[in-house]
Image (cartoon, rainbow, N blue to C red; front, top):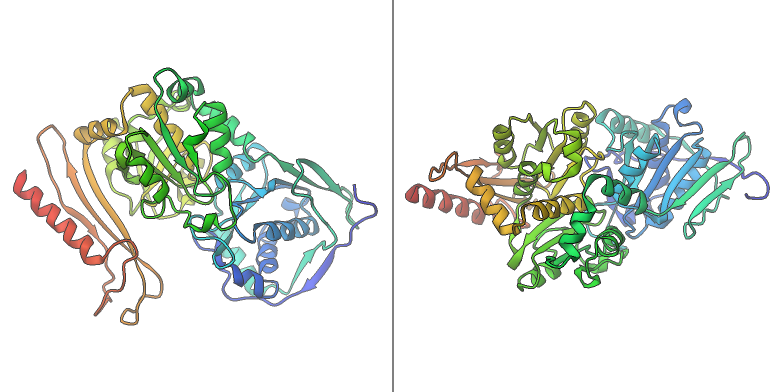
Amino acid sequence: MESGPLQVLTIPTSPYPDQRPGVNGLRKKVYVFQTRRNYLHNFIQSIFSSIDLPDRQGSTMVVGGDGRFFNRPAVEVIVQMAAANGIGRLIIGHHGVMSTPAISCVIRKYKAIGGIILTASHNPGGPDGDFGIRFNTANGGPAKETITNKIFQLSRTIVEFAICPGLRVDLKNLGKQTFDLENKFKPFTVEIVDPVESYANLMRNIFDFAALKELLSGENHINIRLDAMHGVVGPYVRRILCDELGCSASSAINCVPMEDFGGQHPDPHPMYATDLVDSMRDQQFDFGAAFDGDGDRNMILGKHGLFVAPSDSVAVIADNVFCIPYFQRTGVRGFARSMPTSTALDRVAKATKIDLYETPTGWKFFGNLMDAGMLSLCGEESFGTGGDHIREKDGLWAVLAWLSIISTKRQSVEEILKEHWLKYGRNYFTRGLLSKTKSTRWKKPTTLSTQTQLTAPSPGTRDCGLSSLMVPASSTGSVGRVLRGQLFAFISTATRRNSFLRRHR
């Protein structure tokens, strides 16, 4: 307990016009938060002000981030402002670090009114990288548009913010810290928690850890390779996969979180997870996976680096959903995918007579369906997969789901995929981003998506078609640079594939 009450101040400020939260919250370059006066404070105050005073008075909130550069100073400011805005208790990950799925888990476990997540997801970190702030609500998921719009409007008219500048929190030691504030009847409490434990307990209740341990460390165990890409999920991999399920320490690479992610792009994509891809080309490993900076995205690989497309990944999990004990207990209410995601999941839903929902991009739309009791499993083409155990996509959950399928079926990743394609047909899906050039009129990066579907309603029957090719109608002249391949390579590859299949049906 601090000696004497701490002073709460109201500081004048001026608004900024560019603090509209996107699908993943407010994201800017680090220097924006560092150099623009009160830029961070304004947005945090707008979050607190979006919550009605009676609801936030004495309430519990969760705070954590992926550990990227600027994470710690941002956490310290949030603590000072939470105290001044009437929050009664903050639960914070050790060193201010906690994965996005774990934050969703903790919000729900402690019935908090919400949480502030500090991450720019799979974007680069470091002093020259990106930083982001996102507000999740009491269901553990991203705030709905009505709330983010309210935050934005508040940020445009803000004239002052409340802060307790003398409050100094110790993020290094686990346990509770209490602070007396002037004009407050109850002390303000900060609880520094183990960021892994609550999440690990949740995973134990979802999966059969005994069966997974036999798969990963038993007499006939498989060899796996997991790449945390120096993001927040490293300690989770070490604790759950290595310490508890018996994987060798060498199975986990790049597991020390770094502020700049070791200078690499923390995106679970073959282009960026090169350490994993290179090691998987050797026959030594049967299963591989990579995670992004905040732990909500995943990439699955089989032997020889066989890449499992995210659209296929969620479809395979759906088709084998009862390999997971959690779904044996709860049943399956529905499947869902985002609009740009391939229709591989639709085919599973049709065959199993389970409802299928297509949503706009944004995990909050899945959360709405889950809260309504209509959805159990969902995924998106941007390497996100998850269930209704939390309200965020969950990279480690997806890996444990795949390992549960392998354990039950006693098949390799390749065998599981081939069996799935034989049963449902195969969807070929590619995605790229077009960047603006002088000869284009786009105001933001534009998604280019091509999808070729090989359907097999019965063995020996095939159908195919280029189902979606999205190019801006206003584009003229050069269409710009494609970040993950060239535009015409996408088009010509899909066209050649279509032509080949027509000739060989």
